[in-house]
Length: 262
Image (cartoon, one colour):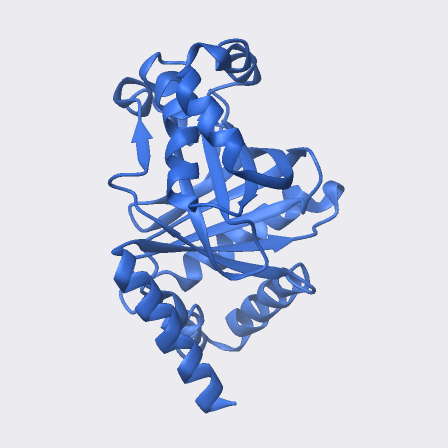
């Protein structure tokens, strides 16, 4: 088993290194809708216990499901490379805090972690590669407005292809994402590729300040490049999935912060 895990790690590392892309690990959880609030309270506490200089985690975003089929919670962990994703130990700093705690504090920590871990039963993981420099675009004005700290909307599209996935992702980027971001309709957008776990070849993601902005984006979807639109759909194979998520919180300056109303 150790040899198999090592070979898997080498394969993933070589695959990502060849593409010079960073990695994001997506964890999908089926948290009951009525318990999402409690999950987020616990996630904030446990994540902040777990953060520290010994972690290789570079960032994290958490979203709850709003529309479409899929899990109710998605946790996106960002890493510089595949090795960091594989070797990251989320328990190293929790263990240190446990060792330094007194008996009463240990009981409290234990209860919090145990309840939190129960929400992870049956979760699945997927690892994807993403080039944040070339395949991600941000509207700087919206980014500086504080919108990232709110309950913004994230729209996800998952597609498979029998052709070139890079060309497919770029075609969608040129057709929908780039025009929308440049027009100030969407906050940001990107596309990523499947690496390990169960997932689609290409995943496109676009962030909007509100459902109203998203609806505006739909109305203007045909205003992008007709050539890019045609190329994108010519590369799509089989059915695709669409989901809408709501931002629930992310790491800011080494601390997990819950989303807030505008």
